[in-house]
Image (cartoon, rainbow, N blue to C red; front, side):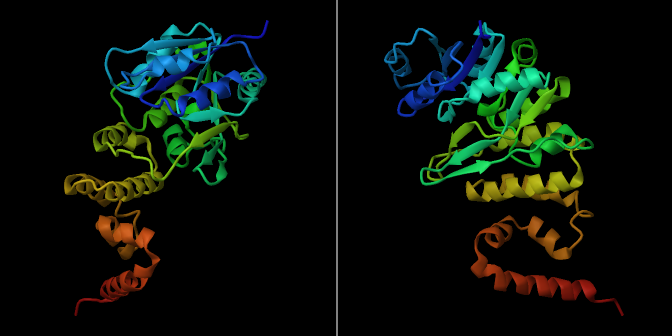
Length: 309
Protein backbone atom coordinates (compact mmCIF):
# COMPACT_ATOMS: atom_id res chain seq x y z
CA UNK A 1 0.00 0.00 0.00
CA UNK A 2 1.32 3.51 -0.82
CA UNK A 3 2.55 5.46 2.24
CA UNK A 4 0.10 7.68 4.10
CA UNK A 5 0.79 11.44 3.79
CA UNK A 6 -0.64 13.83 6.38
CA UNK A 7 -1.51 17.26 4.96
CA UNK A 8 -1.65 20.16 7.43
CA UNK A 9 -3.63 23.26 6.43
CA UNK A 10 -3.91 26.15 8.93
CA UNK A 11 -6.77 28.51 8.09
CA UNK A 12 -8.23 31.76 9.32
CA UNK A 13 -11.28 33.26 7.58
CA UNK A 14 -10.70 32.07 4.02
CA UNK A 15 -13.99 30.39 3.16
CA UNK A 16 -13.88 31.72 -0.41
CA UNK A 17 -10.54 30.18 -1.36
CA UNK A 18 -10.36 27.14 0.92
CA UNK A 19 -12.39 24.85 -1.41
CA UNK A 20 -9.89 25.50 -4.21
CA UNK A 21 -7.03 24.57 -1.88
CA UNK A 22 -8.72 21.40 -0.64
CA UNK A 23 -9.70 20.31 -4.13
CA UNK A 24 -6.07 20.59 -5.22
CA UNK A 25 -5.26 18.00 -2.53
CA UNK A 26 -8.16 15.76 -3.54
CA UNK A 27 -6.92 15.89 -7.17
CA UNK A 28 -3.49 14.47 -6.29
CA UNK A 29 -2.24 11.45 -8.23
CA UNK A 30 -1.16 10.06 -4.84
CA UNK A 31 -4.47 9.40 -3.11
CA UNK A 32 -3.44 7.87 0.23
CA UNK A 33 -3.59 10.99 2.40
CA UNK A 34 -5.29 12.49 5.41
CA UNK A 35 -5.94 16.22 5.74
CA UNK A 36 -6.09 18.29 8.92
CA UNK A 37 -7.77 21.65 8.42
CA UNK A 38 -6.88 23.53 11.60
CA UNK A 39 -9.18 26.50 12.12
CA UNK A 40 -7.31 29.24 13.98
CA UNK A 41 -10.41 30.70 15.67
CA UNK A 42 -12.08 31.98 12.49
CA UNK A 43 -15.18 34.16 12.56
CA UNK A 44 -16.29 32.53 9.30
CA UNK A 45 -17.86 29.07 9.06
CA UNK A 46 -14.87 26.95 8.03
CA UNK A 47 -16.45 23.71 9.24
CA UNK A 48 -19.31 23.97 6.73
CA UNK A 49 -16.79 24.37 3.88
CA UNK A 50 -14.99 21.20 4.97
CA UNK A 51 -18.20 19.19 5.43
CA UNK A 52 -19.56 20.28 2.04
CA UNK A 53 -16.84 18.25 0.31
CA UNK A 54 -18.09 14.97 1.87
CA UNK A 55 -14.57 13.55 2.04
CA UNK A 56 -13.84 11.38 5.09
CA UNK A 57 -10.09 11.93 4.62
CA UNK A 58 -10.46 15.59 5.63
CA UNK A 59 -10.58 16.28 9.38
CA UNK A 60 -11.61 19.62 10.87
CA UNK A 61 -9.99 20.89 14.07
CA UNK A 62 -11.08 24.20 15.59
CA UNK A 63 -8.92 26.16 18.03
CA UNK A 64 -10.80 27.99 20.77
CA UNK A 65 -9.20 31.37 20.02
CA UNK A 66 -7.35 33.13 17.23
CA UNK A 67 -3.58 33.00 17.71
CA UNK A 68 -1.42 32.56 14.59
CA UNK A 69 -0.75 30.05 11.84
CA UNK A 70 2.19 28.45 13.63
CA UNK A 71 0.00 27.36 16.55
CA UNK A 72 -2.40 25.79 14.05
CA UNK A 73 0.46 24.12 12.17
CA UNK A 74 1.79 22.51 15.35
CA UNK A 75 -1.68 21.22 16.28
CA UNK A 76 -1.97 19.60 12.84
CA UNK A 77 1.51 18.10 13.03
CA UNK A 78 0.78 16.57 16.44
CA UNK A 79 -2.43 15.01 15.10
CA UNK A 80 -0.75 13.58 11.98
CA UNK A 81 -0.48 9.80 11.64
CA UNK A 82 1.18 9.65 8.23
CA UNK A 83 4.70 8.50 7.52
CA UNK A 84 5.18 11.85 5.78
CA UNK A 85 3.82 15.33 6.50
CA UNK A 86 3.11 18.00 3.89
CA UNK A 87 2.35 21.66 4.63
CA UNK A 88 -0.15 23.70 2.63
CA UNK A 89 -1.35 27.25 3.25
CA UNK A 90 -5.08 27.78 2.94
CA UNK A 91 -4.85 30.13 -0.07
CA UNK A 92 -2.33 28.08 -2.07
CA UNK A 93 -2.66 25.05 -4.36
CA UNK A 94 -0.70 22.02 -5.45
CA UNK A 95 -0.32 20.73 -8.97
CA UNK A 96 -1.74 17.18 -9.26
CA UNK A 97 1.65 15.41 -9.11
CA UNK A 98 3.00 17.35 -6.09
CA UNK A 99 2.72 14.56 -3.50
CA UNK A 100 3.76 11.83 -5.94
CA UNK A 101 6.92 13.74 -6.87
CA UNK A 102 7.74 14.59 -3.24
CA UNK A 103 7.47 10.93 -2.24
CA UNK A 104 9.61 9.85 -5.16
CA UNK A 105 12.34 12.42 -4.45
CA UNK A 106 12.52 12.02 -0.67
CA UNK A 107 13.25 8.32 -1.20
CA UNK A 108 15.56 8.87 -4.18
CA UNK A 109 17.58 11.56 -2.40
CA UNK A 110 17.46 9.81 1.00
CA UNK A 111 16.69 13.08 2.77
CA UNK A 112 14.48 14.17 5.70
CA UNK A 113 12.58 16.92 3.93
CA UNK A 114 12.07 18.77 0.66
CA UNK A 115 11.22 22.37 -0.18
CA UNK A 116 11.41 24.15 -3.48
CA UNK A 117 10.09 26.10 -6.43
CA UNK A 118 6.59 27.41 -6.99
CA UNK A 119 4.44 29.50 -9.30
CA UNK A 120 3.30 32.99 -8.28
CA UNK A 121 -0.24 33.69 -9.47
CA UNK A 122 -1.25 37.35 -9.13
CA UNK A 123 -4.65 36.88 -10.73
CA UNK A 124 -3.44 38.00 -14.15
CA UNK A 125 -0.26 36.01 -14.77
CA UNK A 126 1.45 32.92 -13.39
CA UNK A 127 5.23 33.16 -13.15
CA UNK A 128 7.65 30.49 -11.87
CA UNK A 129 9.87 31.25 -8.88
CA UNK A 130 12.69 28.74 -9.32
CA UNK A 131 14.57 27.80 -6.17
CA UNK A 132 18.22 26.83 -6.21
CA UNK A 133 20.13 24.39 -4.02
CA UNK A 134 22.36 25.60 -1.21
CA UNK A 135 25.99 26.07 -2.21
CA UNK A 136 28.54 23.96 -0.36
CA UNK A 137 30.18 26.90 1.41
CA UNK A 138 26.92 28.79 2.06
CA UNK A 139 25.50 28.99 5.58
CA UNK A 140 21.86 28.01 6.01
CA UNK A 141 20.75 31.52 7.14
CA UNK A 142 22.56 33.07 4.14
CA UNK A 143 20.87 30.60 1.81
CA UNK A 144 17.39 31.19 3.21
CA UNK A 145 17.66 34.99 3.06
CA UNK A 146 19.31 35.15 -0.36
CA UNK A 147 16.09 34.12 -2.12
CA UNK A 148 12.55 32.88 -1.61
CA UNK A 149 13.50 29.23 -1.15
CA UNK A 150 11.47 28.56 2.00
CA UNK A 151 7.85 28.86 0.84
CA UNK A 152 5.75 26.91 3.34
CA UNK A 153 3.40 25.14 0.91
CA UNK A 154 6.42 23.47 -0.70
CA UNK A 155 7.50 21.86 2.60
CA UNK A 156 7.38 18.05 2.82
CA UNK A 157 9.03 16.02 5.58
CA UNK A 158 9.48 12.63 7.16
CA UNK A 159 7.19 12.49 10.16
CA UNK A 160 9.90 11.62 12.73
CA UNK A 161 11.97 14.66 11.69
CA UNK A 162 9.19 17.24 11.71
CA UNK A 163 7.86 16.02 15.06
CA UNK A 164 11.21 17.06 16.56
CA UNK A 165 11.13 20.57 15.08
CA UNK A 166 7.99 22.50 15.99
CA UNK A 167 7.11 25.86 14.47
CA UNK A 168 7.90 28.95 16.58
CA UNK A 169 4.49 30.00 17.90
CA UNK A 170 5.74 33.45 18.93
CA UNK A 171 6.54 34.52 15.35
CA UNK A 172 3.86 36.17 13.21
CA UNK A 173 6.24 36.90 10.32
CA UNK A 174 9.27 35.08 8.84
CA UNK A 175 7.94 31.81 10.25
CA UNK A 176 8.96 29.93 7.11
CA UNK A 177 12.48 31.40 7.16
CA UNK A 178 12.92 30.51 10.82
CA UNK A 179 11.56 26.99 10.45
CA UNK A 180 13.66 26.25 7.38
CA UNK A 181 16.84 27.38 9.14
CA UNK A 182 16.15 25.29 12.24
CA UNK A 183 15.00 22.19 10.32
CA UNK A 184 17.91 22.32 7.85
CA UNK A 185 20.39 22.75 10.73
CA UNK A 186 19.28 19.41 12.22
CA UNK A 187 18.16 17.44 9.17
CA UNK A 188 18.85 16.93 5.48
CA UNK A 189 16.48 19.42 3.81
CA UNK A 190 16.89 19.52 0.02
CA UNK A 191 15.56 21.75 -2.73
CA UNK A 192 13.44 20.51 -5.63
CA UNK A 193 13.75 22.97 -8.54
CA UNK A 194 10.59 21.74 -10.28
CA UNK A 195 7.64 23.96 -9.25
CA UNK A 196 4.63 21.95 -8.05
CA UNK A 197 3.01 24.64 -5.88
CA UNK A 198 0.84 27.61 -6.86
CA UNK A 199 1.06 30.61 -4.54
CA UNK A 200 -1.78 33.09 -4.92
CA UNK A 201 -0.42 36.56 -4.29
CA UNK A 202 -2.45 39.63 -5.11
CA UNK A 203 -0.84 43.02 -4.71
CA UNK A 204 -4.11 44.52 -3.50
CA UNK A 205 -4.50 42.01 -0.66
CA UNK A 206 -4.33 43.43 2.86
CA UNK A 207 -1.08 42.64 4.69
CA UNK A 208 0.62 43.58 7.92
CA UNK A 209 4.31 44.25 8.46
CA UNK A 210 4.69 43.09 12.11
CA UNK A 211 7.99 44.73 12.93
CA UNK A 212 8.37 43.00 16.29
CA UNK A 213 8.48 39.51 14.73
CA UNK A 214 10.81 40.59 11.94
CA UNK A 215 13.21 42.26 14.36
CA UNK A 216 13.27 39.23 16.65
CA UNK A 217 14.00 36.99 13.69
CA UNK A 218 16.88 39.21 12.58
CA UNK A 219 18.37 39.49 16.08
CA UNK A 220 18.22 35.70 16.36
CA UNK A 221 20.24 35.06 13.20
CA UNK A 222 22.21 38.23 12.44
CA UNK A 223 25.50 36.87 13.78
CA UNK A 224 25.21 33.95 11.35
CA UNK A 225 24.70 36.15 8.27
CA UNK A 226 27.44 37.31 5.94
CA UNK A 227 27.64 41.14 5.67
CA UNK A 228 26.41 41.21 2.07
CA UNK A 229 23.30 39.12 2.83
CA UNK A 230 22.59 41.08 6.00
CA UNK A 231 22.77 44.41 4.14
CA UNK A 232 20.50 43.15 1.36
CA UNK A 233 18.01 41.85 3.91
CA UNK A 234 18.01 45.06 5.96
CA UNK A 235 17.51 47.17 2.85
CA UNK A 236 14.55 45.02 1.80
CA UNK A 237 13.00 45.31 5.26
CA UNK A 238 13.52 49.07 5.35
CA UNK A 239 11.86 49.34 1.95
CA UNK A 240 8.87 47.31 3.14
CA UNK A 241 8.64 49.31 6.36
CA UNK A 242 8.21 52.50 4.33
CA UNK A 243 5.68 50.74 2.07
CA UNK A 244 3.60 49.68 5.07
CA UNK A 245 3.76 53.13 6.68
CA UNK A 246 5.72 51.97 9.72
CA UNK A 247 6.52 54.64 12.36
CA UNK A 248 9.93 56.38 12.59
CA UNK A 249 11.05 54.12 15.44
CA UNK A 250 10.84 51.11 13.12
CA UNK A 251 12.79 52.85 10.38
CA UNK A 252 15.38 53.92 12.95
CA UNK A 253 15.99 50.28 13.84
CA UNK A 254 16.94 49.45 10.25
CA UNK A 255 19.09 52.53 9.73
CA UNK A 256 20.95 51.80 12.98
CA UNK A 257 21.57 48.19 11.94
CA UNK A 258 22.80 49.33 8.53
CA UNK A 259 25.25 51.76 10.17
CA UNK A 260 27.13 48.77 11.56
CA UNK A 261 27.85 47.74 7.95
CA UNK A 262 29.35 51.05 6.88
CA UNK A 263 32.52 49.32 5.74
CA UNK A 264 30.43 47.13 3.42
CA UNK A 265 28.55 50.17 2.12
CA UNK A 266 31.76 51.52 0.66
CA UNK A 267 30.24 54.19 -1.54
CA UNK A 268 29.22 57.33 0.31
CA UNK A 269 26.02 57.56 -1.73
CA UNK A 270 25.09 53.96 -0.91
CA UNK A 271 25.56 54.67 2.80
CA UNK A 272 23.56 57.90 2.44
CA UNK A 273 20.61 55.93 1.01
CA UNK A 274 20.84 53.38 3.83
CA UNK A 275 20.35 56.19 6.36
CA UNK A 276 17.42 57.89 4.61
CA UNK A 277 14.59 55.36 4.24
CA UNK A 278 12.20 57.61 2.31
CA UNK A 279 14.84 58.68 -0.22
CA UNK A 280 15.85 55.03 -0.57
CA UNK A 281 12.20 54.09 -1.17
CA UNK A 282 11.79 56.75 -3.88
CA UNK A 283 15.09 55.72 -5.45
CA UNK A 284 13.83 52.13 -5.72
CA UNK A 285 10.28 52.90 -6.84
CA UNK A 286 10.23 56.16 -8.77
CA UNK A 287 12.75 56.42 -11.64
CA UNK A 288 11.50 59.94 -12.39
CA UNK A 289 13.20 61.07 -9.16
CA UNK A 290 16.56 59.62 -10.14
CA UNK A 291 17.75 62.89 -11.66
CA UNK A 292 17.23 64.77 -8.40
CA UNK A 293 18.71 61.98 -6.28
CA UNK A 294 21.68 61.65 -8.63
CA UNK A 295 22.39 65.33 -7.99
CA UNK A 296 22.70 64.40 -4.32
CA UNK A 297 25.04 61.61 -5.32
CA UNK A 298 27.18 64.01 -7.35
CA UNK A 299 27.27 66.48 -4.44
CA UNK A 300 28.29 63.75 -1.99
CA UNK A 301 30.95 62.43 -4.37
CA UNK A 302 32.33 65.95 -4.75
CA UNK A 303 32.46 66.44 -0.98
CA UNK A 304 34.09 63.03 -0.53
CA UNK A 305 36.83 64.00 -2.97
CA UNK A 306 37.72 67.26 -1.19
CA UNK A 307 40.86 67.32 0.90
CA UNK A 308 41.47 69.59 3.88
CA UNK A 309 43.85 72.47 3.24
